Image (cartoon, rainbow, N blue to C red):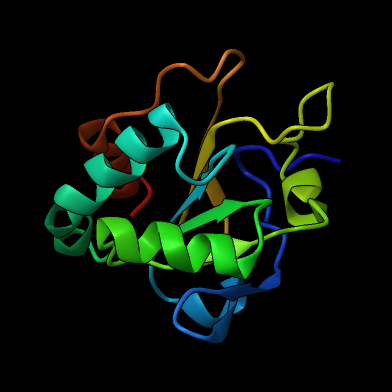
Amino acid sequence: MAASVGDTAPDFTLPGTGGRDYSLSSYLGQPVVLVFYPGDDTPVCTKQLNSYNNELSAFDNVGAQVLAISAQDLNSHEDFASKHGFKFPLLADTDKVVAGQYGTVGPLGFPRRSVFVIDAKGIVRYAHKAIAGLTFRPVEELVAAVEAAR
């Protein structure tokens, strides 16, 4: 059952950059922008995460934590994050369990580019799942979704 708008966001704990584990439940009380992306160092993913990183202050201004998830391992994430200076954690969902809970695994087993906004109470308030994955949701749209979820 994939997470949809109005559902309680499935909780998870995943290893992430910075040498620690991240649990969604630890962010209760603040909104979370949960970004599923297909792969480290791929052109569109790099552009997307750089865009979010460059405009991180817009997310900070609405009190939102950005968490980015893909199926690569932690070593790949650490290399990708240090190369681009990401100021939000990249989480390793190597077995795609979390991607499955959120319904972002495509027919060929690859995670689709998807974004969820989860409110301070842990409810999904915005969900966008890309079919082709050649574009990504702009910061302004995600910030507006966070503001609407208050």
